[in-house]
Image (cartoon, rainbow, N blue to C red):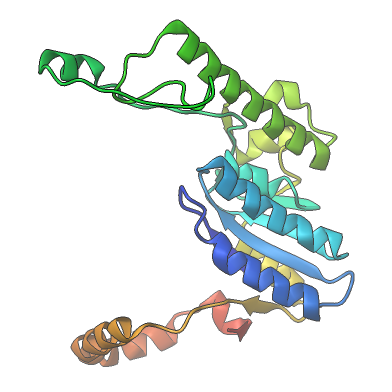
Length: 255
């Protein structure tokens, strides 16, 4: 079992690729990999790489299940659609197969303050729309063309891994909650990740795999100060913590 909590840059892919490399070198063909995925999407190249990492699992002959409890939208769904099985909670947000780009333009403000802006490029389309310069119809048209090309790539990717899905119907940029997503074949079943994992634990050994980096000296000093400041609080709360049931306490943890 792996966890992916995605931000706009998909920075979690750094650990994901290490964990997947470890799995590919140690797991047996046919083993199941569960990815608990939460992401509202972000940069195209970041999530394109994250999705490609999940493809490595399937290429290695491993079964891939993606569990979504809250959201797998846009780049998050690009990752989820790679799975052999997508499991989502009833109110999880799914879909948003589209592309968006927005930026401010300060040209009028600069002009009103007598500030000139110059940009030099080689190549007709090295730069189209700009934040500081004056954008014309040709600039906007070219930029829109690039967005449409990216959208076509996104749709092709989804269709490749979920051929049963009517991509033309769902690739409108809209999102759906779990129950409607199931009707549209965006997902395969309705279930929380906790419920799914507990079912798998009945007949299988389940391992939670995490990769982490050694802290720097500055981080160690900061951690030491934080640990000293919170030690008494932790001791006070220990009885309550021990009484609490936690799914992870029943998992084998590998770090």
